Image (cartoon, rainbow, N blue to C red; front, side, top):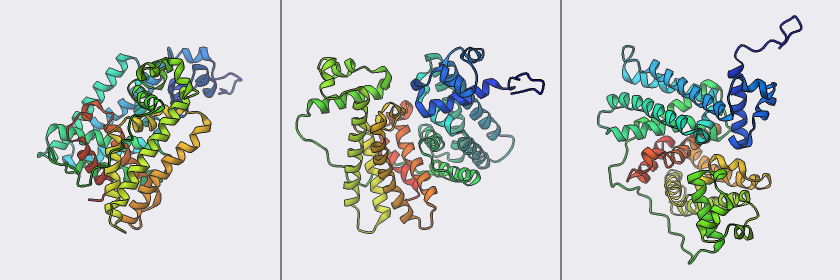
Length: 400
């Protein structure tokens, strides 16, 4: 930037600019797919100039995530100030503010959901501690509005609400900012108003039939073990030797079945898609003809049951998809889009006149709640989680 005298003038907030550029690159390519020089080049600076602001790439990611968390904390403090308004209005004000931030900064929402594991242990602990404390504030206000809830149930609803806002990071559908914000706020309020099932209560839909075809092949064993390792440790921290060892064979023998780790990840994605489509087909066949509401309810139940089974879905729909070879991505993207399209079609039939973009955003919010909560350690061990997730999906879709 020229200052008018022929000299380049450094932007006032170069640090924020670098962080913004880096967050977009991380979102597009994944944390491991971006180097310091990539960030510097995209920002129009040299590598040494970038190091004047951040010690390394990990420090940039930490800055982005902690800054985003600070924004949410400030919004929470301002909206939940007890001296100002009645609790329900404070809740709505908070949700509207968080929805607007999510719409404005979709890249930060994506990093929050997928890339936090790349921080050092201290930064991860700080994010967990502060986010848990913030959600505890939300739960405290919610309990005043709904005193019949248990503390654990209030916490579950607050985590699910956070997922509604994070859902904007998993798709590219958009609306005018005000309309988008209002929709997310409405979906969040549906979550907070949801009546969770009693302990031991099960969804009314029949369980999906078990897929048993005898002893799995070596290839299937490798897919199963790799999916579990990727789920626990992430794609980049797992080697072919690790996968072979878990399946009881030598690392080099894995290459007889898969030419690369990326090919293995793509195969996991295809198998996840097959499981989803099979479960969806069973759910839709069991529904009464022309009863889209029942079909959508059964589809939601089938998704939750499939998601809480083998770990393929958690891997296929995680940030690790950036490591899949370019040649395999179109097929996997088509599988996901075809599956989501089933939900959107049914939702539009249940709610005639709903805008197709609003339907897509609503469906993604519902799916993200299930995806996130099955990965959230504080709630994933709840004994009635399958019924609770199904109930939350019904609430977001407004099909109860």
